Length: 158
Image (tube, rainbow, N blue to C red; front, side, top):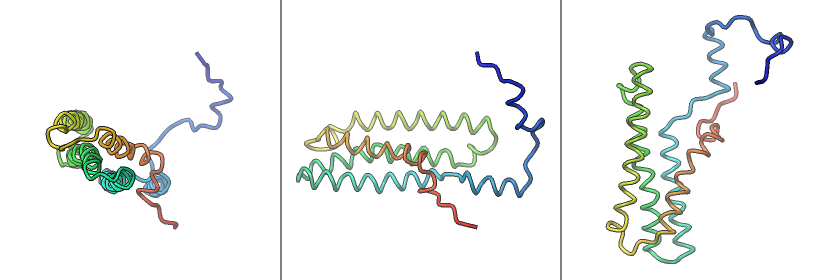
């Protein structure tokens, strides 16, 4: 186990206290909140883009439908998840927020799996590679949003 030397603690304040309103404003300028609805909107745009690329590459309309269905299998559950997280009950207190997050995450996963199982019945002549391309690319928007948060929530210069 690594021990922290007392010389390393000299730069840190002894006590932590509540932030002032001015400090909170400065902190929010440097660490903006990311809206889940912006992520869902980015998923919609990227899902359409993937379907267009699949259509150009394959030249088959069924592949476009498959890619769109793969994107929809991510977008619809993500939108339901976002709605659940932004509801009044989820923001009532910290316990409700944590419970709501896990509940809506399980709903999202279950709905995505159910939509994938239903895909062969709902999409005629399903192209699995195209559907998986739409699914994976649309799902990766979460990682891009975390890595490039300022893209989705630009911070103005003050």
